[in-house]
Amino acid sequence: MGGGTGGGLLGSDIKGLEEKVKQRLAEAKGEVSRHVFISFDHEDLNDVNLLRGQAKNDNMDLQFDDHSVKEPYDSNNADYIKRNIREKIDRCSVTVVYLSDKSATSKWVNWEIEESLKRGKGVIGVYKGDTPPTRTPPAFQQNGCKAVSWEHATVMKAIEDASLKR
Image (cartoon, rainbow, N blue to C red; front, side, top):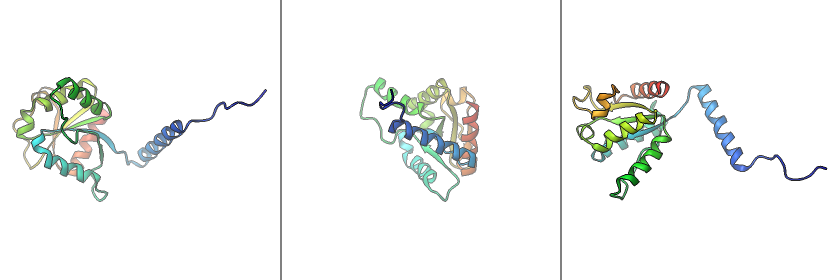
């Protein structure tokens, strides 16, 4: 006897399939947008927002989906903060560390690098100017992470390389 509701796809299943198809089509065209977590010291927020803005500009060859922390967590509970940051890192394939004097001494940036590596994520550093910084976070240096200058093609290549090597 026939009948029943059997076998149809749910709306959530269809949406998931649509996303997978869109991603595969983008990959076939070479238009993959990598999911990145940007690790930085809060005092460098203006520079990081400029980097974020450039990645959203269709006229730039810098393209990634930013899953990093936009606003500081309103909490003094380190476990709560770490749990929320871990969730964001888990959504990404690469952590981009904005290298500055402030990030070199930030315990949070250092922890985010360690956590990213522990979770199998690629990690790269980005710096402004022509010369790499002399000081970097200890975890960045100890793990031999690559630092690149803030040039669109260079940053995108480093993100892609880090994504493939993880």
